Length: 303
Image (tube, rainbow, N blue to C red; front, side, top):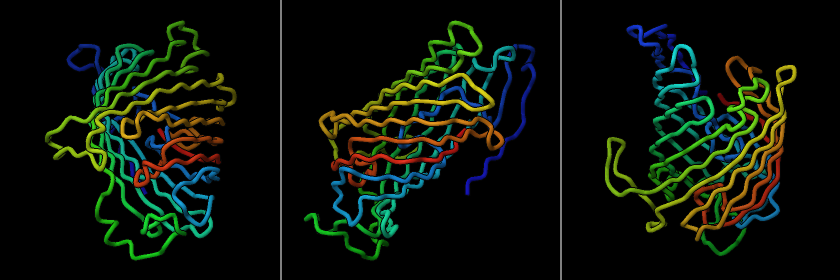
C-alpha cells in the first residue's frame, strides 16, 4: 500500500512575483508514458506469451506493478499553472508471476529523481538520475540449460542484484496540438523521447554501477500517444513505445497499448483499461538478453 501525503502549501503570489510554491505537489508537468512497461503506476497485467525464452512451465504470466510518483516541490506561474519548475520522484516495483502456478519469477526496482522544466504548456524537459535493479524469484532455470523451471529457496538470490543500471536521463515531451489553443484538442497528441547514459563515478545517491553489461553505456526510447476528445469523462487512446539498448546491440523493443481512459475515476487518479502488445527484450530485467512477445489486458491507475 502506497500512501500519498499532499501538503496544500500554496502561496498565491510569492513576494508578488506572480509565482506559486507547492510542496509535495500532486500535479505534474512531465507526462507518464502509457505504453512504457516500466512507467510509475499501479497495474495488474494478464499476459499470454507467444515467444518465451525464459523456458518455464507456462506461457501465461500475471505481472503486478506497484508504482507511484510525486513532486517534492514545484514553482508554478500564478496565471498559468502549466508553466514552471518541478522536482519529481518516481518509484516502480514490477513483479512477475508464472500464470499456471503463480510462482514468483522475479522483481525489479526502478527509482528516479528528476528536475522538470516546463516553459510552455506544449513542451516539457526533464533531467533525471535513474536506477534499475533486479532480483531473481523462486523459479528460474538455475542450470541455464533450457530445462523446466526449478523451485528452490529464493533467499540467497533475493538479496543480491544481478542486473543494475545507474543512468542519467535527458527527456523531452511535446504536445504539438496545444500550440493551436483549441481547448478540445489539448493533450490529444504526445510525442516524447528519452536518452539515458551511464556516467562512471559517485554522487549523493551512491556509487553508480552498470552490470553485467559493463560497456553498454547508453539506451534510449521514443514514443507517441493519441487520445480522443473527452466525452462523459472518458477518452479512447492509442500509444506506442520503442526502446533501444546498447547492451543488446540496439535491438528495438516494441510496446503498444490501446484502450479506455477515465480521468478522476478515483479521486485525483486516472484509470486505464488497455489491450497490450509487446515484442522485444524480456521486461524481467534479470533475463534482459532473452526475448519475449506477448499480448494481454491491463488495468492501471496513475497520476
